[in-house]
Length: 251
Image 1: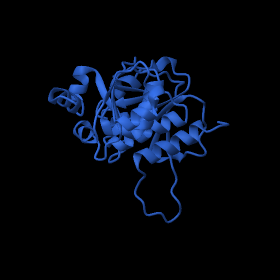
Image 2: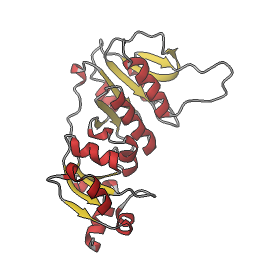
Image 3: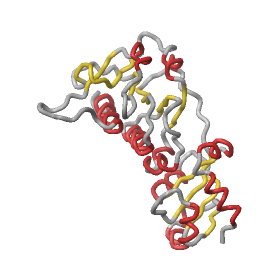
Image 4: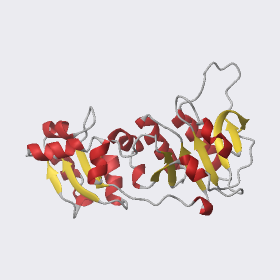
């Protein structure tokens, strides 16, 4: 049975300031948790239903696992519909990629505020083999429970960094191109793909910040179908198309 103190600690990790203070975050759901268990990050503790533990005993060898009831899981979960497993994971500390030494594609995200969008973008990066995502300081916390849930385990493999994008991009060499997703750009299908660079995606509401325009070497446009009345694409959808165009096999 979970103590009131333990419940309070777990619920505190729903909030960014306590996650940062403790250096811990929560992961929920079988796919998510199993990926963290088999990945490089340290799983500190598990809270599981008896049924889940019986099905996944081999995966939790050497990890402290506390059995809880469904009712207790509702008290500690950040989800409306809790799963049967919740993990406490140690928050990683990754050095910011040195922009002078980039050898492949990196995603840069400017002011992505929606947790679902960020989680989906991280999952997309994982699918296309992008291992580093650099977020602006205004972007939603990657360890927000909703973001973690939307990554479906990809956060165990993709390194997410936070930085002043203006300062970081100002150090880039001339031969490293920044491809910015803009409504005033060249058809993304026709631009040259050099095999490395920075793929810059803007916010859901405003796109790429004007202060970052000077760093965009190649604006790229995802063309709409003739007669389309849509104003723009969802940020996660735009990121997926950009990643596909630059990272698909044969490029």
